[in-house]
Each structure stands twice: as structure tokens, then as C-alpha cells.
Image (tube, rainbow, N blue to C red; front, side, top):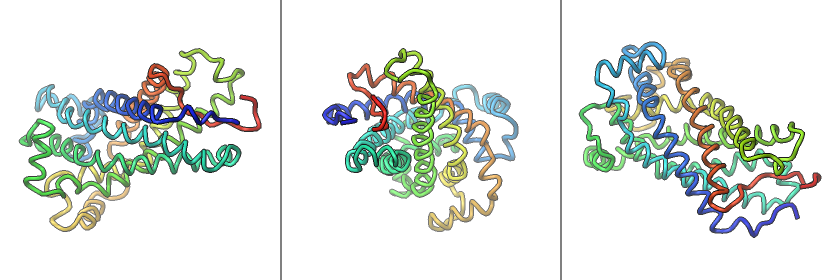
Length: 310
């Protein structure tokens, strides 16, 4: 038998979810200043022109350094919840798909498994992330909006009903599902290829060497995921700005925003800072996740080629 399925029990999934929540909360929280600047560039590219550092200095000069922590509460809380379901769910679906297909077929179909598992996990995670992401973006775009996480969410519901929380649900799915599919599939594939290229087995490598593989594969995956999901990220930033896209339904508002902005700008405005941010963030996430899992007493699931000794 290639896999010892008894290892992947409730404790394994719970630890995977906890490690995912911690890694996403830490990395997204740490990069909150970068996200504030990126969001400002996306929301008002006429006013905020230039690179990440120059726009950051402009924002600080106008509003003070504390503005860079805007939305930190919803970011840390929202991405802990999202990371819980995303990483925990990805491990759950990936292992269940592998068990149902059998060893050889699962190895042959490892990329579709990674894509399908991450998509299922992300859909569930976004249901919980969306209200907190809407609150964060409103805080960044409207200086008068309440700064507390719960106060911001409550204000959104009071003013706009549940649509205040979920106006961006469709674009967040369009952004996060392709992003997460690319993130886990590219990271998993890159990790497998790196280990295949090395002259020794993964089991023989030191902890530091394994972490180097995690960081390298994570950064590559982050850049790929950022490029794929950027148009939807731009739409999400804009639709959560009050009055953006007119007063119609969500689809008509999204269509108006896309038409006003233009496809090229949707794909490129703020892309450079986002690649840096997401590449670094994803590398950090896999570094933390792959470090915490053994500390929690569980070994992360890896695909194995049944034809090779393991």
C-alpha cells in the first residue's frame, strides 16, 4: 500500500485547518500595508500613480502612517477563517479524491485532484470570508467608515442589508477560486518537480532544505495565482466602493465597472505590487504551514508514484 490512510483522521484535518488559519492570518495581516496601497491604486489610479513605494509615501504624507493599518482587524480575522477552510478543506478533499481513485489513477490525475480539491475548499471558505473582505475594502476606501471589525460589518448590514456583505461574492469567487486552484496546483506540481530533480529523497532532506522547497514553490505559485486572478481582484476592489457601477444589480454593476475601466487596465493596474505581495505571501504561507504541521504531530500528505520505492 502506497499510503497509510489511518494517519489521515479527524486530528489530521483539524490540525491542517488550524495551521491554515494561522498561516493565512499571519501573512495577510503582515502585508496589510501593501494591500492598503494596492487597493488605493486600484480604486483611484488617476490620483495614485507610480510604484508601490511612491504611492505608499503619498498615502502616508496625506493621511499619516496609521492609515497603513486600515482594515487590519477584518484582514486578520477574515483570513484566519478563510485559511481554516481553505487549507483544511484542501487537505480533506485531496485525500478523499485520492482514496476514491486508487493509488495509480490518483498519481496519474494528481493535477486534476489538486485543482478540484482546492476549488471545493475555496468555495466554502469564501462564504465566510466575503463579509469580512467587504468590511475591509469599505474601511480602506471610506475614511469615515467605522474602524472596528464587528462595527464595520454591522454598519454594512444596517445600511445595505445582507447585500452589503455579499455584493462582492460573485467577484470574490471569480478571484479566489482560480487563484486558489493555481496556488495549490502550481505549488504542488513545482514541489514534486523540485524533489524529482534533487539527487536525494525528500525523507532524507533536512528540515531547512524542505523549507527551502516550500518557499521556492510557494513564491512561484503565488506569482502565477496573482496574474490569473488579478482582473477579478480589481473588480472586487471597485464593487465594494460605495456607488461603484451604478445602482443596478450586481451583474450590471460589474459590467459597468468593467466597461468603464477597460480590460487591459483590469488586468494590469496594480499587478506589479500584487505579484510581489502574493508571491511573498504564498511563500510565507507554505513555509508556516509546512513548519507547523510536524509541530502539531502530523505529516503533510504528499502524492507518491506507486511505481517508485517510497
